[in-house]
Length: 346
Image 1 (cartoon, rainbow, N blue to C red):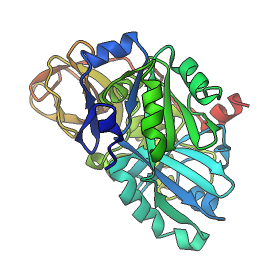
Image 2: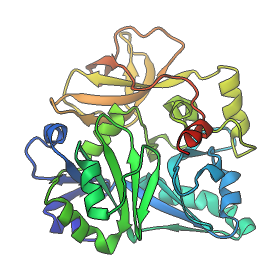
Image 3: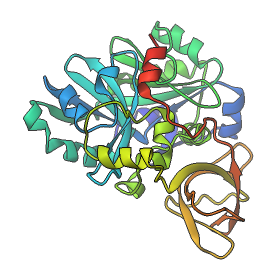
């Protein structure tokens, strides 16, 4: 591991978690602009003359929509339609595409795509030489524009300045994901901390939860249909493209209304973070779903995203003995075509 986070006086609690000695970091993030190392995410590059065709046959995105400006959500499925990973898809140049996804799924996804890569004269590379930073707050866009001399992109769009890429992400506050060479991470982050408070990446993950955005982890690999995390409501599934692995199952579930579980947002009456996969149980102890993301909010209570059954009327629910209060998602549960999002950006 590099020591650039230690140089910023942060510490790696694990491979996926960084913390700083910032008093009440989540509350600070509500009031100030903050910067955080996004160590829970990683980068996989797909390169070669047939990279676009390789991806077109494997991913839920319409690959030609990734045009260097629009950077759509996507996912990769098994033949049974279960997600192997979900990601954001970027086009870097004519023969290079980039995927941002949970770091725990980088190797499994690379190994899965390697089975097809030789047929498309393509190569796959986990980019350990790149770092990811997050900027959050009302001054995030202005700060990024000054520091990187590039207009910040809209949500699910990309903008670049040489080796540095900016990505717009949704949330209750302005959010920018910054992808840059690892060798420049310490100097760039240090400059950003002159105006932005350094905080742990739990703050970014909480905003994902509040945005109703679930990034698949190894805990749920090959277990959920894309619709079970509302992926088609976020523009992550194209129903207008041709075949891709798992497409028939995904399309059938959509057109026949056979989605039996949905992603829901909730708050727990307690401060104990549940494990990923923890059961969401009814008053009789029957499991109606499970937790896919969990973080503490600014008031010390747990906020979660959970995949819950849509077949049964939910009465009182609990997770690890903590009562569940369902919260409203910031988007409607209805199909949002990525083609529509791309057209709106032109």
